[in-house]
Length: 394
Ligand SMILES: Cc1ncc(COP(=O)(O)O)c(C=O)c1O
Image 1 (cartoon, rainbow, N blue to C red):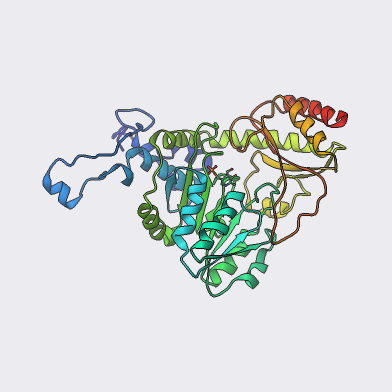
Image 2: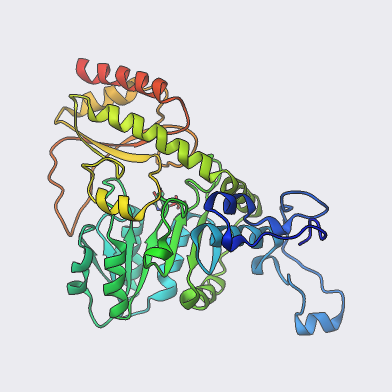
């Protein structure tokens, strides 16, 4: 421990989740500083020819790891409850690298129908071109996944809750069927951020996150994480290194900084999101609110069983109305920005059209995705009230 050799070190494995977030990655501070330095480095010098030949020093080359990357990797693995983790330059890089690490030509992938759309494009494009076949499955399939598993199915991929329409998946049932057939289970754990959903306790072998969202938490950096259990770690690490993956030092540092405040941010996102979602549910213009914490949401019972909280992202299906009514709702909003991300401190609202191939999306009304930030929910509700005036007058 570089920061203070005389102090005893806490046993991280015994700490509560909140304390883990504060203690995570703290072994790398030097000269008494609480935080690690941001190492901008490629070349690492070896003091003697012997140390060069036997590569006996901890750091050998920038891409192979720095004190900054080690600190954040340890922190992510601790938050997720996995064996070890690696950082990548975006969430999408994490998804594609994780899939390529475990799939080869002739293999079959079972992919959830509600997957983040660019991941679907990756499967239908690059993976298909490599001779890897993808079958999309109903997010609510649960144990029924067994009937879709083939002898060459290597990966069953979940995203829980699903992008946009927020279905919470029965991961333990899916994992049991996958493991029985010798496939591994991968999950996009961005919504629960590893803090509200402990993927490894629910059967995941590999957990990926767009750390761009809640881990970074301030809309100021792109980052991806892949966390593995012990059984999958070496295979993933080999692929990660072969593909030359690494992430920028400042962005890794911002991710570590975000992790230390994750609990308080997520708790507030949840409190605000519940207040806004319940208010939206009471509005005449709203058909349904798709938020795992609300009792009518798909997979709400599974959420209650498996999750420790709900983050700030949910969706709303409006009663049928004209496109320009939705546009005037959006244009009237002053506090809710329109942008294709989430997980930062600010509130967002964006329209979307669900895309399905394994199941049908039948709701006739327009859909909106909300990210509820750290503003006062009263102010957000006032803003939405104004938006609905725009919708009614269009
Ligand atoms: C659920 C989910 N996974 C992955 C990603 C991709 O992350 P990034 O934008 O960092 O590549 C996103 C981005 O919106 C996402 O919403």
